[in-house]
Image: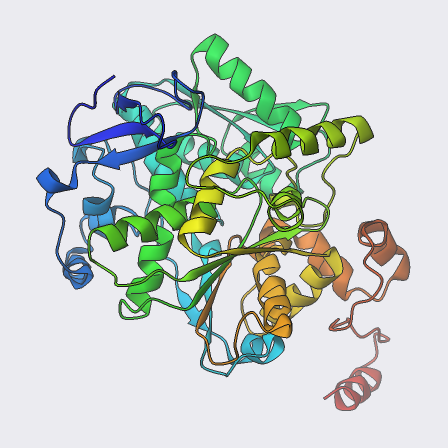
Amino acid sequence: MTKTGLAFQQCIMPGCGATYDVGEVRTSCDKCGALLDIAYDWDRLAPPDSLKWFESKWSRRNEPLCRSGVWRFRELLPFAPAEKIVTIGEGQTPLHPSVGVAKYIGLEQDKLFLQYEGMNPSGSFKDNGMTAAFSHAHMIGAKRAACASTGNTSASLALYCCMSKLMQAVIFIGSGKISYGKLSQALDYGALTMQIAGDFDDAMQRVREISQKLGIYLVNSVNPFRLEGQKTIMLRVLESLDWEVPDWIVVPGGNLGNSSSFGKAFSELKELGLIDRVPRLAIINAAGADTLFELHENRGLRWNGGNPDRKIVDSYHAELDAAGQRADTIASAIEINRPVNLDKCLRALEQCHGVVREATDQQILDAKSQVGASGLGCEPASAASVAGAKMLREEGVIEPGERVVCILTGHQLKDPTATVAYHTSDQAEFNRVLGSRGVNTAAYANRAVQVENDLDAIVRAIQLNS
């Protein structure tokens, strides 16, 4: 097929390269079955010749598309006409320097930055991609939109459906595989919630089948428009650093949409001459859901210029099936064994000279406590980035003077149970929530002080603990 228009969908495999119109709803290539990118005819689009041009949007923040931290950059994701864009003010997220976390990791005090995506309207990074996918769904006239979710995607989809009144949200979750903080959002926002026996991978399989059978628009990150919105996380990072490229981007790895979109963002910016180099990328799995780590670091799977060895992937999946092995980690947002964006992520690792590591739940919760002690609350999955950065610093892969950006993907209140259990003085509660996952200690716990309801006793306790 031939491309039409200034934006089009294109197979990611260089040996195929089939193209499709942006008006079509697709998650894969008809010709070879691979994932799709959203591609652009940059010669005819003529994007700005400097990233500083985007700073002019700040003076127009009364306009919804300039206020959005996604659509402020729409010249770099120009697939949707302005009148079809659905925005709820997503992407107004800060990049925070953190001396305390820098010390914990082992970096010089001015070299560590935390990109806090928990400040999005639904409390996670998902809104960056949801506004893009939802806008495409609006473009093609969809009436229902669906997703499989460990919680954050469902909260985001439900919110966009609720606020826009354009579509019904249908969400699939695994039985017992979602925190109440996230489930409460989907229920409050009126989504049709389907809880099936199984985990995220089971829910993902079913939602893809149901979407095809019933013609429901699928918004999981297998949807290429989702990743266009997530590219803007990196644009905001660059904007906060006065358009200087950091040395490292460290991101949690679950379904691998963020890492895939980050690689695409930097590849496009480099192609357009808007940056002169790309940062290195580090993707951090949870040890209980470490497919990417196992395939990339232990079994040598590589993008290989668009020719990854599929036998390595198939063999590993067969081993998981034979053992009945399910993903299991306190970092529920990345509790995924079969990431749908594996190929795109492999490409990003090649583009950005990337590495992959796995962090235990103990390492993740210890890192989370240090993020919190520095004034930013994040959900457990977010802290995988900090745990991974610390690991890479200890290995000498990251140097102490390099500038590192860790992505915090979700707000602390997405999963408060893990936070309270970590800091509790109740050993039974600690063991109930964390012990089964191999978390044995809470080295940085800030436990509540037990005290009698007596003025003098309270005064003594405050003086003793001050």
